[in-house]
Image (tube, rainbow, N blue to C red; front, top):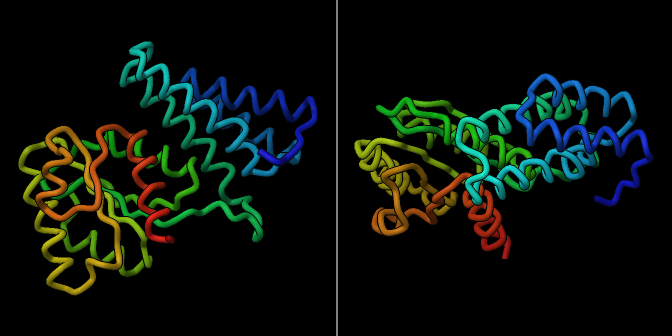
Length: 223
């Protein structure tokens, strides 16, 4: 973070980090509001407070020191703070890396993992268009076209979700738009082998892997 925070601002950044780790939504939102009052640039609050907090959550989750319900609360706390900060991004803030269309495929209403992915991608500089759950394959494509998206990310927890992911990519090919997007998949029944088999650009085993995957794909796209 290039911004040099004073002591009061540093305390707010520390509180943002602590609140994310603790999964305290109200405290995180309050700290975000105080950061604006203290004239902390929103990006500084994200990079200096929220991002270190969620990285620590990921590390603890990997060490099995935190579990999924706690991780969900941390993601929700972070998302609440981002909601306060986003409207205050300045015209010169180059925060958006890429636009991601995200959703749980048709017939599947599970969205905990998807919501964590959304929060992590957002705090890592992506504009995320979350279509929610039970999303028709045509909706993924239509919104990707409308938003001029870079990445289409499909999630599913049921084995019945798998054909929908395959069919979305097939329809993209039929419509002649497949090469416009990086397509990634994730969720319980998915795998790298399945991603390769249906022509996806990648597979993420965890939400944190999803951020790394998007970073890698966007690097490849811009190369």
